[in-house]
Length: 391
Image (tube, rainbow, N blue to C red; front, top):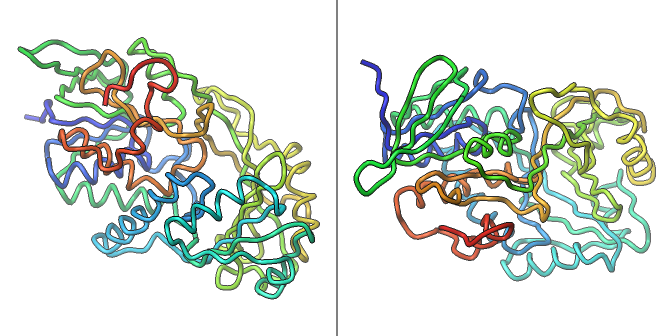
């Protein structure tokens, strides 16, 4: 007979749910169930593709502190799975000298001993001949930055979780979730579209852009925005200047919309460069059409003035989804009024690199252990929006 009751059910098998399944399965083995509404490794959410930036340099020092541990956790998972999902390229953060974000980034790096070198425009040019920044700008180079292969990373966590006994079910859409009292504790009932019903002691919801809709089932409303962003690739004249062995991942903090990108890593003649914005969407009725015109206005001028020999016209585009909170900090908390149901969402376009940290936090909380990063408890709480944090 198929198992129907689990210690923990995780809903959503993107990178956050999959990393959580991996860490929890180390302790609970076959008592962990991971559910996914689509095929595994689908392209409708926020966890697919070949590249995400990984970096320790952050303007917000709590993320810098977390990233130091995240690097170690990524390395440990790679070692356990005997695979590689991280490519080190180095990273360059750019901005005008008095930009508050770049100043905070430098302070955070100094506080946590992150190797970071502040460069003048001429020093940037000497290090990366294809890059020119204005005279009133600086660059901050961190040799530890690089690229995570997103789809491969999610598959790695699936593999490791299953190795520990975790059950994974795809094409299983949760139609209802509610709780019933069992003695002094609550049991969570999860109903699926295929007629199956599962029960659990603890439930973790990591459904990405569907979080706002899903929380409506629990009569909880959070200020979340599902945003469709455009991923674009741009042709380079001299690929030898832009390969991942000589060219860094980069972030430009100077403009109104943050611009970021990657070397020619996925395609030999194309760099990837995107802007941190997009229109609000309903994840169930997306058109999947990239917003090329808006991206062209923002990114093309930056490319033209900053990078040598990059064609300022998109060669290839696709769409992706962020789930934004008003302050762009994550939500990792227990759902108000629902003891034992936890939510992880609102990763705001910069969460992928921290997936092992999110998995570790949920694992410790579900197992009633102390919060591994207590300084982030209030930063990531629902309380900051509407009520006292329950963790």
